[in-house]
Image (cartoon, rainbow, N blue to C red; front, top):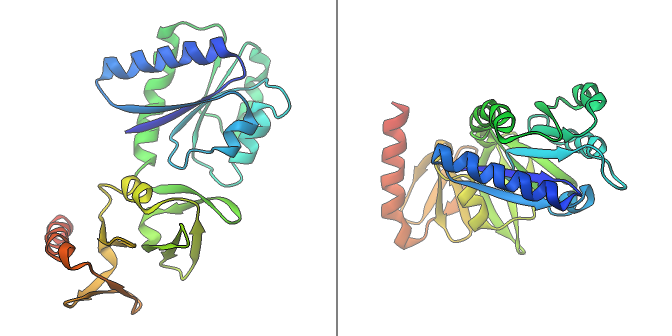
Length: 237
């Protein structure tokens, strides 16, 4: 499922883009999620952790869309940003932040559709590679393959990575499990989510991951875990 956001201080523009997006995905027969933001400050305060495409107005009160894009690029170099503006002279500035496209207001649905189609393809390919998460130091983007396992920690998440790094994230285990659905992760315990590729062996009550880490297995989840391991091994072979 593609996750989009619109950040524009004009309510009419937000409504128009919402309608265009709804029509676009209805025509494709695909599900989507959309978040609307009325300012750059609002967007940063509620940054969607699994965002794929951002439609961003350049001229906004206080923090401009261009400045917001520069901040995003400090932790996410690949988010698909589509600038929207009634001032085409700003198009060149989009190159500074690797904007995917620039739509000049006002524009009709057909122009929107032509701009969105390649953006969707890029976002779908990118989504399998990494996660954007809010952590103690701000936003961070982690390659999915680098995550060995995650555990709950005082109403937060602690992600353990293959390079020895551990990252505390402001998220829930349920949310992370949804984000990693279909990416060969398994929730072996209410408090633990493991990367199937990191499993070395298991016994009656624990999973042994590469590096010697031991993670508990809930008794009622062991049969399902064995099935997930067998399915993963089949896919790899």
